Amino acid sequence: MKYVDEYRDGKLARQIAATITAEARDNRDYRFMEFCGGHTHAIARYGLEDLLPNNVRMIHGPGCPVCVLPVGRMDDAIKLAQRPDVTLCTYADLMRVPGSQGLSLIKAKAAGADIRMVYSTLDALRIAQEEPDRKVVFFAIGFETTTPPTALAIVQAQKLGLKNFFVFCNHVLTPAAIQNILESPDVRDLGLVRIDGFIGPAHVSTVIGTRPYDFFAEEFQKPVVVAGFEPLDVMQAILMLVRQVNDGRCEVENEYSRAVTPDGNLKAQDLVSSIFELRDMFEWRGLGDVPYSALKLRDAYAAFDAEKVFDITTQPAQDNPACECGAILRGVKKTTDCKLFGTVCTPETPMGSCMVSSEGSCAAHWTYGRFRDATEKQAS
Amino acid sequence: MCLAIPVQVTELLDGDMAKVSLDGVQKVISLALVEDVQVGDYVILHVGYALNKLDPEEAQKTLELLAQAGVGAPS
Image 1 (cartoon, rainbow over the protein chains, first blue to last red):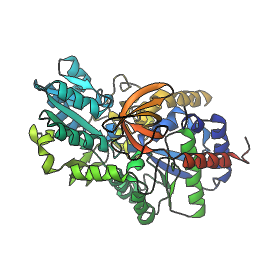
Image 2: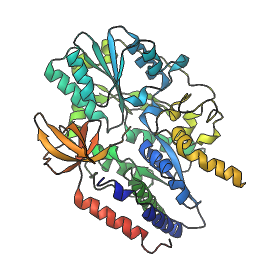
Image 3: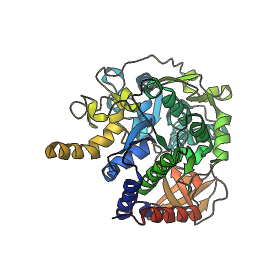
Image 4: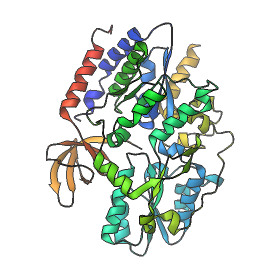
């Protein structure tokens, strides 16, 4: 596959790792956060942590939209799906996320709710066209990457005059979350999490560009390297971060220049801002209430807004009290610090959201990383 | 969730749609978020929509950068 295979060369990855080892200074350690779940998945899948020297460590950030969706919003979606007049369309990622009282979309579907997994908003639109008697609700979730397709679906529904297509909007914003992490007591006051730099999002940045990160580099004095999701992209980004730290630089660099420009996709940005506006506040699992971190439909599109049409008021709901997803998403704890991990909580029966999505740090560690734990245990 | 893959455009269709190919797998996707896409171009595909065109020159530069990063390292 062109533009994929050449960025997965294992021999070159080991050579870049050797360069990182040679350039990383022995008298200090380096702690970088990869914000995106896509990077977390690549790091686990390709065993990149095994290639890195011991003094270069990765902290897995909260950039998995499935993982940060609060339980209360999941409950809202399940309730919507249980209405006899509603067909809920959702990306597959959300099917197994536990709501409160042990329910999930997949269990609701088994109990008879009309829930359809879709690949694209185009599929949800098609269902609404083909089944005019059903109220088709699209469960919209995702960062800046996934928002323009939702916006286009609303434009298209309006053009087609569809009266039975609605969007339950849970779109969230990356820069607000990064800022929240950098300003959190864990990082600022308590010193529980030290972050020397960020690997910036790949496909979020294709849409928003690299400029939004300038603020973090300047204001918080943290280097940022935007990187693609292939293993060599991640290795190269880590090398670039090590070099920035060594030089005392705090810049925004772009490793993923084949797809990301400083301005991003202006057409997509204009479209999104014509349909959506900022919410004053939105709850993130792990981060709590984050101001101006999510989007809602503008009043002009209220007829498509499931929250208004179906009068949804989100009730706060608690995670399983033993679940450490919150602390893991903030980088305070590791997957293996959670006593549920690998015992009652596995990808088949997830307790917390980090075990559901393949991009969640728990699922990634379960699928790929736990074998390393076993080897280490044996060795000691 | 933000997973997206480079695919090659093989045919332009009506209504801002296009046929694309990934290793022989054909799919119809939307080009409504991008501009000036021609047959033969690579685009980054996410949930049925092209998010951006892939820049072949920049891709080549990155490959050279990767090769440089690996040079001189004890392997």
